[in-house]
Length: 96
Image (cartoon, rainbow, N blue to C red):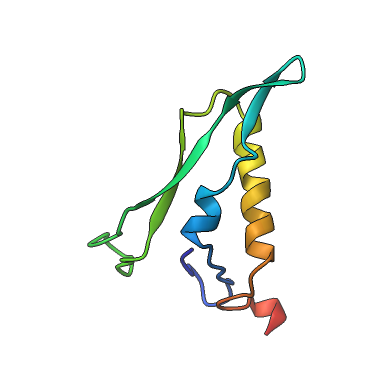
């Protein structure tokens, strides 16, 4: 993640943990219908006006693409869990 403002906190995630996510599924009648494979793709941010270059930037992508909001919300919950399991790289202003 990128610190946008000096008061923002920054956490980091391990790509292996993100890719190991297997809880992103859609269900039909209580039976898993689609299991999304989660990948992390390096997308360096370079030369964007008004932004600092960020060679470590990456995007998290599902395969197949999401069908509806529930799978995305499940991924967000999993990412929050993973982030909470790690310490802050830079604590937010309120915790300094």
